[in-house]
Length: 64
Image 1 (cartoon, one colour):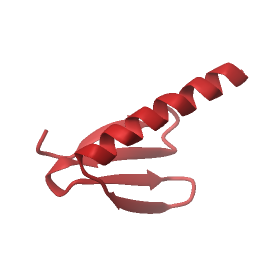
Image 2 (cartoon, one colour):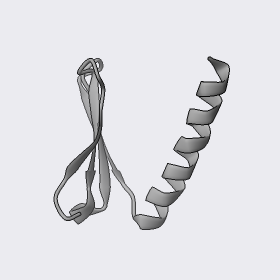
Image 3 (cartoon, rainbow, N blue to C red):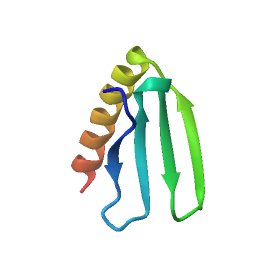
Image 4 (cartoon, rainbow, N blue to C red):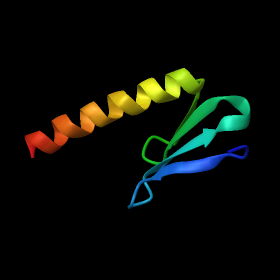
């Protein structure tokens, strides 16, 4: 992946998360708050984030 790609788009258009691999960053845009945040993150950080997101998803799923 060399170009920026959308990792997640909120189903109601309330935000988007984009991976910009060429610049080692994630871009999070919130339509609700009309804000954008860039986070520098390398391959190890991406893998750690993925593992943590899986844990959070399990917790949320278990609470429903």
